[in-house]
Image (cartoon, rainbow, N blue to C red; front, side):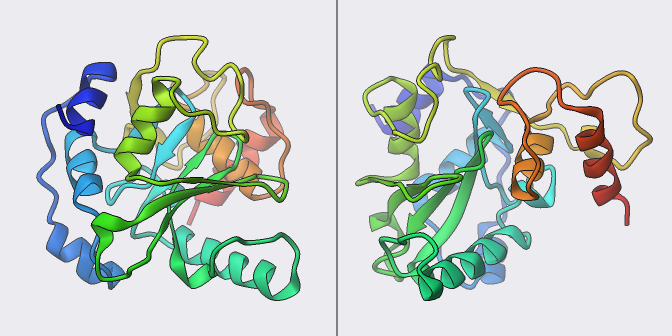
Length: 224
């Protein structure tokens, strides 16, 4: 049984495969992508694992989780700055790190793109949201997800209660992210708001109610 088959048994995908145009995506990124990731993204679509891990996807519901959006480039620029200034130790050269996901706490998941022309050999690195720690997984992104969600691998940066409830996949719905007036009814999926808030210096809890001023700031950021 492949890693993807095991993952789909653990966290059933919500919809039929997407059949993404990967030639166009890779041309836009200027790099080939791992075969396992392309299968994973096709199978699941955009969404969240265990209400915590958000993989970047070519059809991400917002720019903050879109693989071809501006965020991966911004993250690499920040890593270069950290590397040059010694702000946080970066265990790999920033140009070898390509962001491929994030978490509700603000950590980022990266492909270690070495060798650059053989993406199926890329491994995974995870940084710490507000600290110096890094964690390396010597396997694919699919194997990383499977290892974490089955409890076989513990990432020190991740919360200890991550698996207190059975892991599942929650799809993202782009209609939830249209810049509409804020109402008293909170959106069903608040993961993107939390990710944006932490990336922009707001202190928000991992779960529960998001402060109104954070919702308002996020809403204003979505308005062209």
